[in-house]
Image (tube, rainbow, N blue to C red; front, side, top):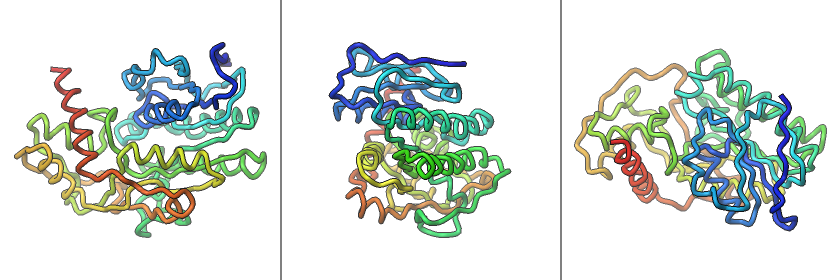
Length: 328
């Protein structure tokens, strides 16, 4: 199917034009906000498989913002100049990519190919949202960008891990073969408002359970580690990369590491909850350690996270309180 997106008559030539695939998702919608605040005209594409129109409802009256319901695995053509393409389309939580394994692989392969082709034709900068999952269950800790990873290609998580690894490979192929100005950001665990309550990731899972009086479910013995970056910090790092001369890959995440059990206890403390913690078997290929080495981000982008965990969690918990209250 050939889809033609026409530029708006209100587009201002002096404003950078950015296309954001996955623009109605958690990260994509926050990225749209940042780009608009920087003076960009933004076209958000999303097929709404996991995205949500509520995430961008506040932008409906913004004359510099457009939303197109579009599956980026289909051919895409844009009439008019494009300065940046941010490829953020993909199921990103275990529940989603286990439910939609083929679409996850297709958006990492076909979707990335289509977005790169558009970037090449428009001479636009291309920013790929990759992931710490390219490192798999890492044998190197913390994870540096030159680590090749430990991924099970045929395991249940492989559809997401390998989709992103392929996306990185084709992105660098376009850079080397076609001289496309590409950037790759490897995103580590990120949290904040607009996450889905039941998307399977640890932050909304624990917060939802704490607020609804349910036991907090910890998989494994809780000694596996994670590090959590607040969404505004992550988006700032991505914007700095997009406007830099660097190509990446560059880790963007918070290097402050804690066990999953410690994180559950932090949620209970901040929500003033006395819910118990229960333990269940660890899912197949679930990483035992996850912590970014952000030396490159510090040196090349002048970036490091600023939002403390308690501050970010309080904002996120307040968001979920509103969501839970609105559904009762």
